[in-house]
Image (cartoon, rainbow, N blue to C red; front, top):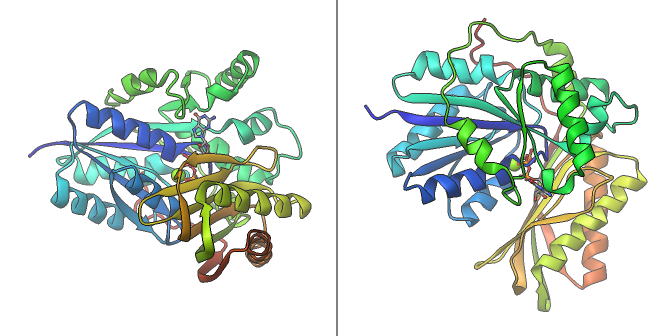
Length: 364
Ligand SMILES: Nc1nc2c(ncn2[C@@H]2O[C@H](COP(=O)(O)OP(=O)(O)OP(=O)(O)O)[C@@H](O)[C@H]2O)c(=O)[nH]1
Ligand SMILES: [Mg+2]
């Protein structure tokens, strides 16, 4: 039976996983390989799935809980991709608030499905926006120490740590962050790269080509702290249908909506872990992101079209009560519609705090 290479790219919310996976998928495709991608989230209606599909990739989705709690769904989704396109490599993106993946996903996959999947190293992207503060042990990170615990556990279990977004870090910042990782996690393979610009990405591709030996020991994880850290994040997924009397610039509109939500979050001192908004017309997709309250709003996918109608998806993961988050989002949407002469309504709304992770398997 053909062995399918299975790669997982983890990292905190907004670290750049989807961007990195798109770049990896493009690279492998150009090398003549068939690629399948599996996205994952606590909620349904994922910007990432739409974003990767809009870029032409084959994507399966595991919604509703993290891979570790939906292990069988992950296997089923990988099998569906296999039936459809017989990929040579599957790249999985776990939820950005998830950790303990080596013990609950990677090794169970190797143990139970080793005749089908060849497991590559677990790569974890270090998000500089929050990582700098967490690694420096600063106060006022925007998250509680329990959420910071998850961030650090993700790095601890990585085979490869990638300090992502090096294109927007000064040389000094880069050296400092790499040093902080090396001090805290001695012996860890760590590199700087940019999923966006492609800088040093060849190093990551080389590192991902190795096949690590099976793990015989696993890090300790305090599931109470992990669950409480995750539950401090409010999760909101919402769908909108919008229209206007005359065509409007979709990129500008989506960017403006994220900016409006950002101001409201900042006013309420609610820290954004990752807020992403997608606007889609029949022919094009626009995505804008906010990865921290101190960061600028960014456009990660440009539609470059004027439209008179679009479907939008808002995915927000922020440090707040979900009801407060919903109210902030609804008010921002209303204000945005009024300012821009846009009509429309919210057609779907899901908001919650993630439940306690209960892995299907855990190697010990
Ligand atoms: N400057 C810069 N921005 C990046 C890089 N990688 C990702 N980004 C931006 O960071 C934001 C988040 O990127 P995503 O790829 O969506 O991050 P993610 O880890 O998949 O986020 P979640 O799935 O929500 O956890 C987007 O605005 C990206 O354009 C990078 O290397 N450099
Ligand atoms: Mg993503």
